[in-house]
Length: 202
Image 1 (cartoon, rainbow, N blue to C red):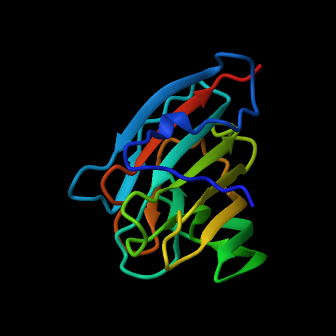
Image 2 (cartoon, one colour):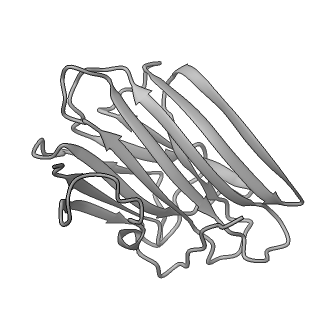
């Protein structure tokens, strides 16, 4: 099963392989956040301009939680913490045996675009993921996202290789002006990085 391996010195800007929109050179960098040595409970993009058709986030991430396995990266829009989200997931892991899983959650307070490794794994193991946010400024429809990510434990004796594909929606017609990313527990560790891009479209 092909998986993604990242190193501590890697850049989120390099993980844009899922080019699905627009025309060549239609991606523009809006902002990049790199976590420093103290870690960070969350990463936020604010004052997002309304000059694009779609948004994309490319990220590499690792969490400080001292537990074996993967941990959700959670996402919310415009500081909305109410039950206005739904998400669906399809994933696979390989390690001490292999398994696939699928499911969904309605009326959730967040979306899970991909999963990151915890601090029990090797120091250089990060997840890499791409999140597409469609029609983010359209005030006539709910907002849809899709996320793709994974990581390879690279021979570590604990944990699993993960690969996941997720989708979700935010049941609001408001334009998205801010995005918050955070772990379900713990902090993003040093060198975690998220890069936000605007997509002009055709």
